[in-house]
Length: 105
Image (cartoon, rainbow, N blue to C red; front, side, top):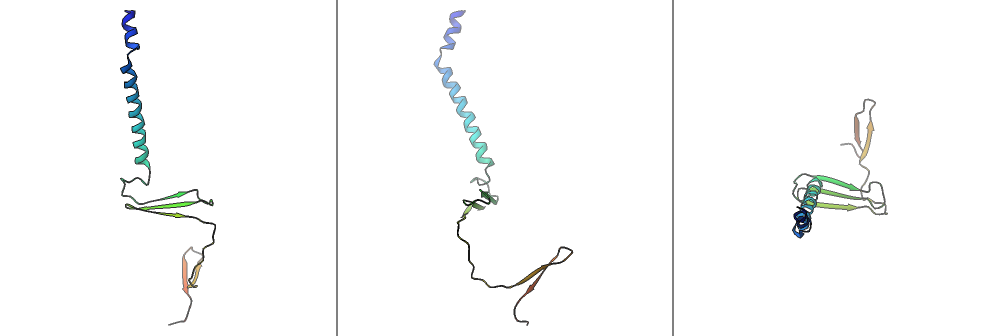
C-alpha cells in the first residue's frame, strides 16, 4: 500500500493539472474585470469616467457608443471669446429666470 501512495505523489501530470486550474481561475477573474469596466469595448452604454478629480492631473474620459473622447486638465486658465448674453436670477421659490441683455426688439 505504501508504494502506491508514493507513486501518486511523484506524478508530474498532477502539477500540470494544478497549473491549468490556476490559469482558468486567473482567466475567469480577468474576464470579470473586463465586463465590470465601464469603458469595456463590448458595451454600447454611454459612460463618463473621471480620474483624479480635483487634482492637477485630472482626466475625463467620455464613451459614447464606440467613440472614446479624453480630456486632460492643464495648469492654464481658459479664455473665451464670448460676450455676456444676459443675467440669471434665482427666485425665492427656487425657479431660475434668465433676462437677456442687449437692445429691446
